[in-house]
Length: 187
Image 1 (cartoon, rainbow, N blue to C red):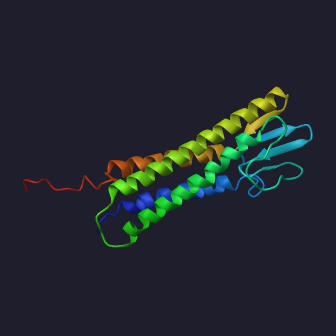
Image 2: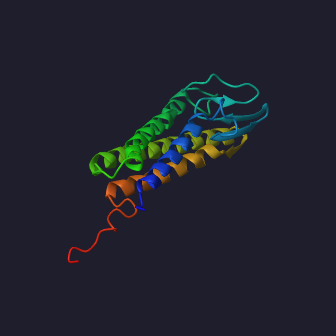
Image 3: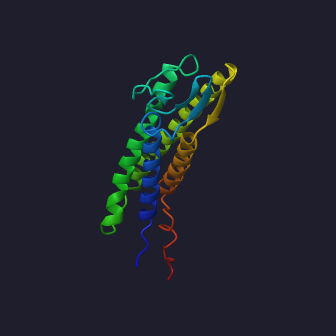
């Protein structure tokens, strides 16, 4: 049986896609996944990509604000999470023919560029998530409220790391064995 390294790359990209979709749906839709949980005098409030939930939930959209701690500008940039999920989906669609069909010549340049774009979007989304988390934590702490960091930040970090490993693997063309299976030319 021939080892198909694209199965591993497809599986890793699928895992990144699922992580980014779960982070995108954080907030009012999936309440246990959030970036920051602020313990206020009126109760706790959890902040995600599409809004926040406390005693009541905000409208589900990009660009919400919460007092002076979270601005509309900062929360609007969270649109990078569904963008990163979309580029990861495109990369999955690009890798899919290689796990299903017969061996064909791999367009390393196109897959490399697509995986680089997916990695850049995942890293940018993680950086935006860190910025929103840090600004919210400092804003709430200056107001005297306690905060805790949620799973969405760590999920986006895992997605960025895995997507970067996939991009390095595809971009270098090694693909976990593609270059190491060659026989010496003198045999």
